[in-house]
Image 1 (tube, helix red, strand yellow):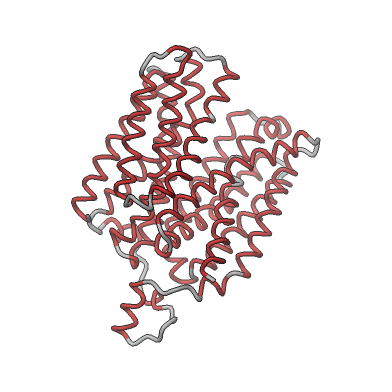
Image 2: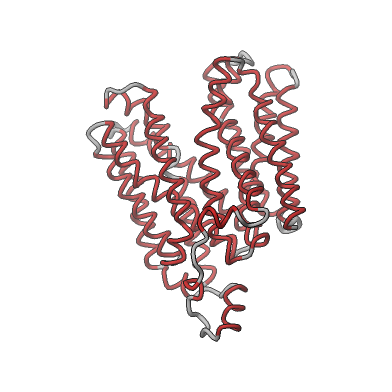
Length: 400
């Protein structure tokens, strides 16, 4: 039963990544069909991100009340409805409206699944699951490209992904008994022993939601939240501005730069596949430090003026490889640092901080690139790497 549930969660992570790159892949066509400026994609993305943050912050309360399985199933259903809504939206403002449930669904499933895996499965599964997210994020644009090249238009690209999400929703609903019959955590067993609750009863319902203030009051929580903010600032800034940095600073032609920029995500996906095996030998803190060292090595390599722009290309791949273990290992270590009873609340706020880092820091670098110099791209990444490393070492001292 446990293996069957794990298989369902793997499929859920692939599905979680499917919609993430759709807007970017479809927007050049969508903007023409809807007669809006290309820059207006940022409005849709911002609304999705904002409500993803809201959903992540509510995840502790929702999971406590309904359970991780139900929250995941409902969140995926909400995402499916939003994707179907995108496919029939008559104008831009309807897309903005539909982006609200889109964000709520994405945040709910992200926080619920990540914490559930962190509590109930080994670190290798967390790394491989996030690798599966990368697979889904890579497949999504191909599905949209299939719809566009076949003359079906971008609405059918969204419909195909919506259909896949509906199928996943059905699978998740059918799998709900597996979530209920899973092995109890150590925290539940201890609570049963002291309170006389019968095995299998939902003792978690007796705990009250912590809320943001409650999370921030926990020693070490601020450090791990800043780590998450910094990590996502690095990942999203590196991915978003890689091509522009190669063109404007490295002199690479636009078509080549667009292809080379994707190597950063290849590095993350391959790195997470490899990280799953490394976690069998190395603990989460060691994996995080290894990732930080690789990110540093990649940034330094980008600064070396090698022929044929090899420094930039190799540096991006190495930064991607370094990013690979950090995100999943930080999440997986959360129950160890703070206890299973607090982990859902902390993971929810972690997700919110992650989305805030993704939402705010890449545009900030855009301003720096426009008004100062895009040559500061590696140094901007280095700034957040240093802050993330300092916070990790502080966390180790406080909770290690």
